[in-house]
Length: 383
Image (cartoon, rainbow, N blue to C red):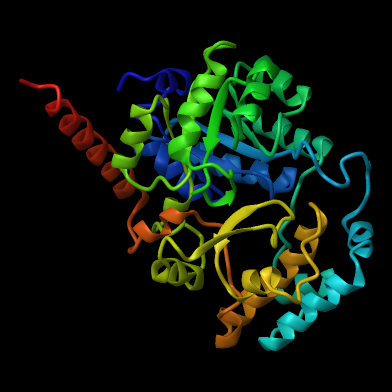
C-alpha cells in the first residue's frame, strides 16, 4: 500500500497498534501492521528484557515504543522526589475517601508498599513521568532496532526530540486539539497522532471526525507532517473513513485489549465484552487528567456528591492505582462486590468488540474491511 507512513516506518499497512503487552506488539508487526510498546510502567532493566524478547519474536519486522512525559504536572519542577514523599502530601480527606469506598465493597487496601508487593507476589507497577527517568528508558530503547518513539500529554522535551533525530527515528506526539498540533509541528515533531474524544486513556474534548480535518487544516501552512487518526477505531471501515479525511493511517489501542495475545485479565475481558459504547466515561478520577475508561463504581463515586474531587497528576495516580489493584485482586479471588469497582482504560469502540480473536485475525480484518470500503467508495465515481 502506498502511504507516507508506510514509507517512514517500513510497514505494509498503516495500522499502528499501541499495547502494554509485548505479545500483541510482536504479533501486529508480524501481521503487517506496526506494534508500539507502552514503556511507561517499566524499569530500564525490565524494558531491556521486554525489547530483547520482542527482537527475538518479531521476525525482523519494525516496531516502536511509547513513553509519557507530561508537559504540565504538579511536581514537574521537583527533582529526585520519591513516590513515598509524594504520597505523604496527599490530603487525608482523599485517603479516607478511598479507604471508605473500598470498605463499602469489602476491599482492604494494603497498609504499605511492601505489603502490596508481598500480596501480589511480583513487582508493583511503576509510572515513570519525569524526563530524566524516561530518557533512561529511551537510552535502553535505542540499543534495539526501534523505528518510532511517541510521547503523550504535551510537547516532548528537546532532549527526546534530539535523541530520536540523532538515531534517525521519527518522533510522534499525541494531541487533542489543533492548537496542540501547531505547537508540536513548530517544535519539530515528525508525526502527529490526533486522538479524539472517543479514545481510551487520555483523550480530547473533540471527536475524531472533527479533530482530523481541523488539525490538517491548522498545520498545513506550517509544515507537511503526517497525521494519524486515533479514537474509537476498531474496524478497517473506520480506518478508511479517517484516511478519507486526510489521515495517513490509524493509531489504535482498545481493540487489542481482548485479543488472544493480550495479557488483560479474564475479569476485565468479560467486563469489556459486556460493555456497550455508552459504558465508558471520561474522568479525572484515575490520573488527575481526563482519561476514558470503563464506567464502574469507582468512577461513579469520584463523580458523585461526596467526592473530594480528583487531585492533579501525579497525586491522583499515586492514590488510585494501589486501590484499583486491590479491587482487581479481590475480584479475582471471588469478591463479586469488588468486581463493581474494577475499571480499565478503553475507548468507546468497546461496543464493537465482542469476542476473543487472534491479533493476526484482527489485522487481517482491518485490511479486508479497509479494501472493501475503498472499493465501495470507488463505485460512486463510476459511470
